[in-house]
Length: 439
Image (cartoon, rainbow, N blue to C red; front, side, top):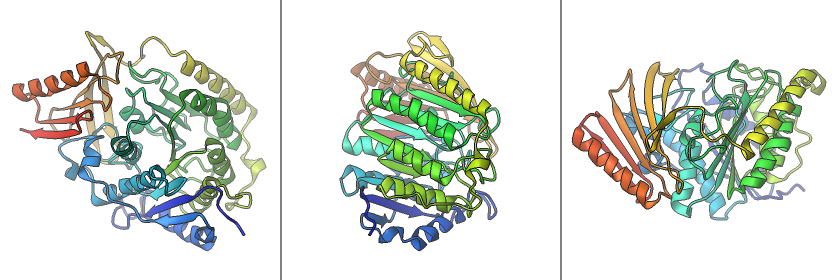
C-alpha cells in the first residue's frame, strides 16, 4: 500500500463565482478537472495526504503587502481573498507542524500583482504568495524566504514586491520576455540597491524541454539555495510551461514538473498559471502532489506525451548552459549598483510605466528606496494612472532600523500636511500599523 513519506496538505479553491469571462483561459475549469483527476486516481486514499478548505484572507493581510489604489474593495473581490486564504492555510499547516508540506491549488492567481495595485493585470489582482509570506513573517517571526517561480510568464509582480528585500530570494525561470507577456525578466534585473543579487531571472528560449528546466535547477537554483540558506522554500507553481499549453511555447512535461519538484523540495507550492485545462493540469498537478508527498510518480502520463518529440535542440541546450553559468556568477558577484534607476541624495530612484492588460489601465510610478546598510530601507512610491490621480505609498520594513522607521513616519506626516496626493497609504511593518488617508 502506498504511503506518503511527507505529510502533505492540499487546499482546493476553484472560485466558482469569479472569471474574467466565461470562455477566458483563467476560469474555474482549470481546477475542476484537476480535482476530479486527483480523486479518481485515489490521491486522498494515500495515508498522509489530506485535503483542506481555504481560509479567507483579511483586509490586514492585503494591507501589509499592497498599496491598493483607491482601496482594497475596488481592486479585489471575495474570491481573491479566499484564493490568498488558501495560500495562508497552506502556510499555517506547515508552520504549525500539522503537515510537512502543503500545495495550494487555488485561483485566481497572483504573481503579476505588483506592490501598487490599480486593477487586474495578467489575470492577477493581489499577490497571493506575497500575502502568504508576509502572513508568515507577521505571525511566526522574520524568515529568510526563497521564492522559485516556475510559471512560463515572468513573475514581475512578485519581483516588484521583493525588489528591495535582502531577506527574500526571488528566482524566476520563464519563457524569454522577448517572446511572451509581460516582456520582462532579463538577466540584468538583479534587485534593488539594498538587495542586489537577491533577484535572479532565467529567460528560457521557446521550445525548452525537461532537460533545460532541470539543468537550471541543478546548476543554478540548488547552488544558490545552498548559499542563501532560506528558512522556507516556496514554489510559485505555474503549469503553463507544459507542451500542450495554448498560450505559451514550451515543452515541459508532467514528469518534468514532478522531477523539478523532487529536486527543489519546497515547503509550500502555490498554483499560478496553466491553461491546458484537460490535457495538462490534471496530470501535472497529480505529479507535483505525488512528488511533494514523496510517492512514486513514474506512472503519471498526460495525453500525447512523447519524450523524443519534445526534446530541445542542441542550440537551446548550449544557450541554457551558458546562461546558467552567467547567472550563477552574477549571484555571487553582483554589480555595485542596479542598472535600473539612479541615486538622488540618500535615495535610489527608478521610474516605471505599467500597463494593466486585463483592465486597460496605464500607470506611471516614481519609486524611491532609502539607501541603508542596516535594513531593506524605507520605500516610497508616487503613483498615478488613467484610473486614479496622484497617490503615495510609504512602507517601513518589518526589520527596519530606527533611522528608517523615523524617516518613514516623517515622510507620511509631511505628505499629509502638504496635501499633494489624493490617497496616501502607510504600511508600517515595524509597528504593525496600516493606515490609508483619502482627501
